[in-house]
Length: 181
Image 1 (tube, rainbow, N blue to C red):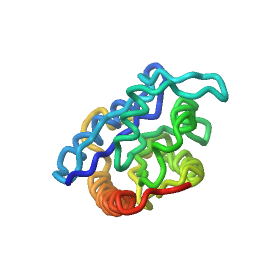
Image 2: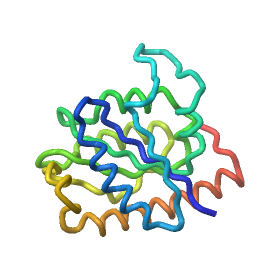
Image 3: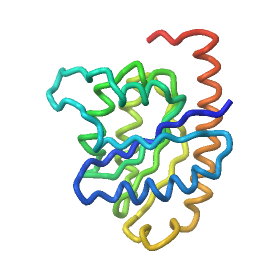
């Protein structure tokens, strides 16, 4: 049974680079026969921006709930992750629980790693398992001119292998015994 993975493009800014990174990642992901991928764009989510608002049940919530695992594609803005991504995460709860999350990050010298480290704590609070290995694009802006930097294809394979293990294990565990948080 294939693993259903929601790939979340976390940047919502005009002129964002996240779609370029998502295109690269999609090419890597399509090499997997054990997974199917749903590209979820935070910029297309009709989410309320008022604190304390609940999302209207709809397509975004259903897509997140249907996923067995997640890959979050995030830039680093001001040493952290984007506000639109935080909004998407915070307005859902049960959809994340007892599922694994992997990260693809991009940015300047740090390659978005500070954003990933902040997201690990957020996702831990939502009862997810974050996979150890990530894909990180340092000074990512050259990605549009061709393939990823040396080693990124191997990093993507390793990360997806870990995601497949956790995704399968947690899906089986949820089926055997519902998770109660």
